[in-house]
Structure formats: structure tokens, C-alpha cells
Length: 287
Image 1 (spheres, rainbow, N blue to C red):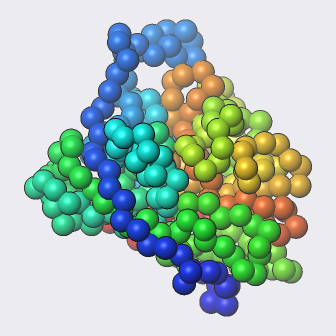
Image 2: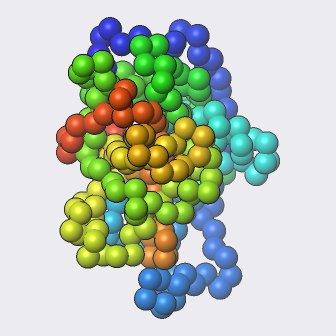
Image 3: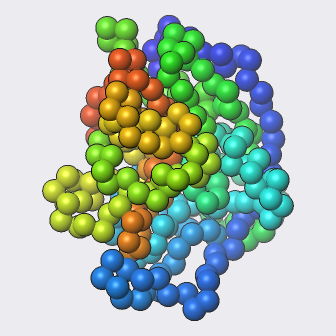
């Protein structure tokens, strides 16, 4: 982070919030119609995924909406929403029960559940139902030099680790890839504080042509002409920065998911393509 870029970090609240390792689930009979109208059964969301990590490809897995690492939630609806609205990407996670008690992880995104990365030796010891506390920190974070730019669900330490520059009074963020707004699909109907938005990846030739099929989990991405301040809409003078947080989907209108971390007017917010702009590199995540 730029050394003289001012934030309100000292005024933010740090709060422990607990969730529980989820069980993978299926709706009976478990079939998903793919883009060709054929029914398939694939592993999907929730649970503990041991072989898909932040930094791995978002495409190519025999799965649907695959979430890297550990998925946690609470069955109580008020606690569920607290996890969604208060937890920020980059927050520390601490296992409070089970064989892996005391091990530390890092929040890598928010999908239908909160997603946490742990090292392999820890994943092997995690059981469904184990309690994991997150040190929620980052809600309300602001850039004092750029009050027009909205920050969303990002830990101050993650912000400090990102490659940012100020050029002609404009904040420039390093991102791995640019996504055209015309391919953004499911999640547009939701507010940008809750759950992600999917790409529409059914046109495989287009994905290859735009090199979107090379996108990795944890990549910082930019969507030009996207306003994510309150919801998710098209505005020609706006831009949004996000993280790729889950894998591809076979469902029509769905694909890899992105979670918004920054949005603003293009006169204040810009981007630079850097293929290494991935959460794995930014946060020095170990396997």
C-alpha cells in the first residue's frame, strides 16, 4: 500500500464472530441441468475442499460453484447475516474446537457461506461442525484521501498489501484481469454487501477468446462501467474492483463468482493489469 494513503483504520471495531464448518448438501435428486440441457451430478458448495485452493484455476474442475478451503455458517438466521455483513476478506480465522483447535487461517471470500483458507496439515484435522471464530475487522473502512471510493468487506491488512498507486489524483489498483460487464449474471439482483455475483460462462468460445478461462481463484478483477455502490448496475462512468472467490458452474447464467471490494467513479478509480494480482501472492498464503 502507498505509505501516505490515509484510512480510518484506528477507528474500526475488531469483533470475534463464530461459525461452524458446513456439511455439503444436495437438493433431491441432485441433478443440475448444464448449458446443453443435460443433467449432471457434481460436487458443489459447502464443506471442506482439500484439493482446490486460492491461486488455482477457476475453470476446469469437475464441480459446480466449487469453494476453495473451508465453508462456515450458522443455522441461526441472525448469526448467518452477521457473518455475511461483518466478516471481511483477509480477516484472521481461529479454530476453536476439534482436533485442529488453535490453528489459524485467513478469510478468502464470501459466497453463500464464508470461505477460509487453511494449510493442508490443518485441513486434514478439520471436521464438519467444528467451530471457527473470525476476527471481524474492516467494516466501515474508508480511504480518507478518496472519500468517493467505496470499500467493501476488506481487511485493512489486505488493503495495505495490495499494489496501489496514485497517478494524477487517481487511485490505480493492480488487477489480474478485466471482465466485460455484459457477461455478469446471477447476483445482479442482490445488494453488493451480501453474496457474490457470477459470470455467465456458458459461451466457452467467448471465455477462451477473452482469456477469461485463465482466471484463478483469488484473482483481483475489474469490471468497467459497473456501479456496485448499493447494488450492481451498469453506469458508464463507474468501475468496480472485486475478487474471484469460487469456481465455474455448468448452469446457464452462472460461472465463477466475484465479490466486490471497491467501487467508484472512473475519475477517482482506475486499474493496471498485473497477472500476479492474486490473493495468494498479496497475502503470502501458504499451502
